[in-house]
Length: 126
Image 1 (tube, rainbow, N blue to C red):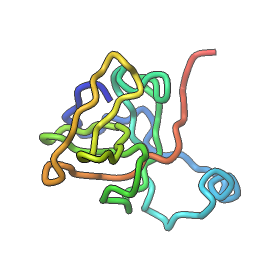
Image 2: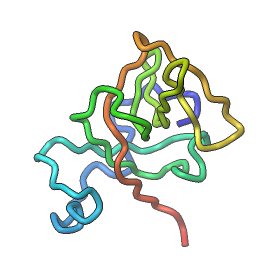
Image 3: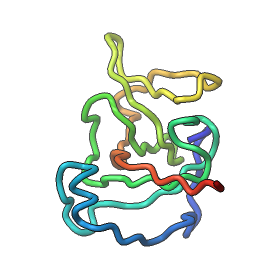
Image 4: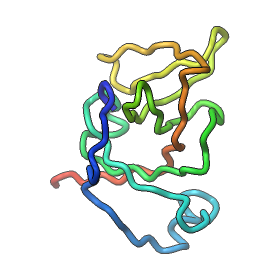
C-alpha cells in the first residue's frame, strides 16, 4: 500500500492468530495447508477504503503468479505493496483503491507476486 515499504525484521502488529477451521472454510471455501498463510500489516493510504492503514491482511503465499484480477502482495524494486492487479488489453496494471493514487502498467518481467490477499482484518477503534 502507499508507495511501497522495505520491510523491517518484525513489522507486523499481529504475528500469530488462531482462527477456527470452520471460519476459514466459510470465508475461503477451503482449508489451506499449514504454513501457507501469512499475516501482513498494510501501511499507507493507497488502498483505502478497501484496506485501511494498519489493517492486517491474510496472504496466501502459495500464489506466486498473476491468477486473474484480484488483490496481491507484490514486490516492486524490493518494496512490498498490497495492490489490485488487473489484466487489460495492453498489459497488467497495478491499481490502488484510493483514486488519489494513479494506476500504472507493470512489465511482466518486473512483476513479482509474493502472494494473494484473501482476508482483511481491521483493527480499528470503535
